[in-house]
Length: 595
Image 1 (spheres, helix red, strand yellow):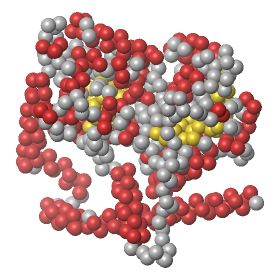
Image 2: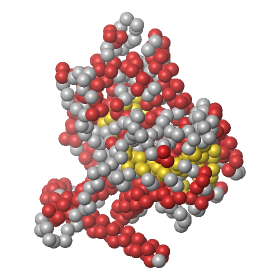
Image 3: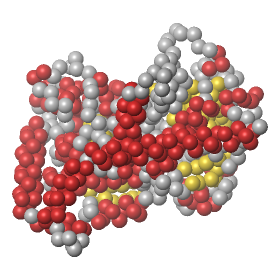
Image 4: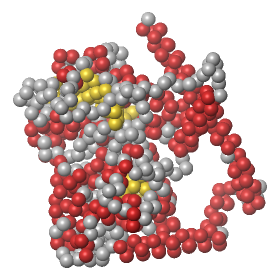
C-alpha cells in the first residue's frame, strides 16, 4: 500500500511538472508572437548595416566608434554632471556647532529625498506622509533568464484565465481551486493563546532545527543560533530548555569546503566549543552559551546548491517527551531528503516552520531551470504544508505555501554588538567630534563594499552591470570591496576584470570587523527573503543601497536605507552618498527605531 501511494505521488508530481512545462511553452509562443513585429523590424535595421557573411560579434564593438553614439554618451555625462552639481549644492561643506545644519529636521529631510524619487514636489511634502506605505516601482533586474521565465509564467496565467473565462458553466475547466480567505495573524496583547503553542511559556522545552552551523556565517546558521540563545533567558529556572540541532559534516572535504581549511574540526565537541565561545565572547551572550543545549545530525554538502542536507532521520533523534514546541528553520529544505519514518506534525504537538530562502529564484540559475524552477516551487509548498502547523514567512517576496497556516512576520533579531556599535556611532555623530570622524566626516573618502555568498543568484551580475552603467553614463568609478566565498567566486573575479571594474575580492570575514572602516553597503540581490547582512549594516549605522523589492520593504523604513527601481536611481543614490548629500548629522533619529 505504501509503495502504491509513493507511485501515485510520483505520477502526480510528473503530471504537474509536465503541465507547467506545457503552459510555459504555450506562453513562450504567445510572447514570441507579440514581439514578432518588433523582432522583424530589428532584423531589417541590422541587415542594412551588417554584411551577410560577417560575424555579428565583430560588429557589436563598432557602435563605440559611431559618432552619434559618442555624442549621446557625452550628452548623458554632461546631464549627470549638472545633477551632481545640484546635489552637492545641498550638502554643507563644513560642520560647526552653530551651523545652519543644526536647524534642519533630519527626518523630514530624509523623507524629502525618498519622496523625490517618486516625483513629489518638495512644496507638498510634510511629515504626515508615510514613506513606507507609498506605492513604489520595483527593480526587476536587467535582461536575464529569471526575467524571461517570469514573463512566461505571467503569459501562461493570462492565457489560462482567458480560456477559462470563455468556457461555459457545464464545460470542463482548468480553473484553480477557490482561494482560502482565512489566514493567521500575530496574537495581540491580552488575547488567549492555546497552551501547547505558547512559546513564551518558560516551562516549555523548545527545539530549533536548522540547516547550517557556525563558523559558516550564513543567515540559517546565525539567526537560529541567536534565536535559540534569546529563548534560553529565564527558561532553566522555570524548568524549560532550548535545544539547537545543527548539521555535523561527516566528510572532511565538506568541512573544508564550508568552513575553510583554517577552521578544521576533528569532531563535534570541538565545533560545539567554538560555537559556545562565539556566543560568549563575540555575541556577548554569556549565560546563553552555558544554558543552550546543542545536538547534531549528520549532513552532507550539495555543491551545486551550496547547501547542507541531512543523511538520516532527524525525527528519530528527538524523543517526543523531550520536545513541546519544535521550530524548523527552512522546513522545505529539511524535508526534501527526509528519511522515511514518522512525520513532524504527528510526533510533536506544535511545529513552526520559518521560511528563510526563495528557492524558486535559486532554481532559475541552475541546470534544467525550465523544469526545475516550477518543480521547486511546488515541492517547497508541499513540504511546508505537510510538515508544519504554522508557517512564518520573513517577507512578502515568498509565494503562498499554505495560506491557512502562514503569516508574514520578521522574527529575526540582530546581534547586540552591531547595535552597540551603532549607538556609539550615533553619539559621536551628534557631537563636535563628528567633524573628524574617520569614515563619516564630510571630506572622508567613502569606502563601498558587498558582503555575502559569491553566487550569481545573489545578484553579483546585477551589481557589475549597475557599476558599469554608473561608470559609462555618469563617470562614477569606485573601488568595490567584495567579502565572502562561494562556488562562483572565481567566475565573478574574472568577469569583473573583463569589464574593467575595480572589485577587490577579500574572502570571508565577520561583518562586525567592517564596522569602523566602510560607509556604504550595496546589496543587489533579488533572491533574498530578509537579508541578514542588510540588518547588520543598518544597525551599525552604515548607508545601505538595495533594490526596491518586497524583501527590502522592512528595511526601507530606515532613513539610512536608499532603494532604487532602475539604473538611474541607483546612480543617483550612489552619487548622493559619495558626495555627502546625506550629511552625518542626519543620523540623529536612526537608531531609536532599532532599540
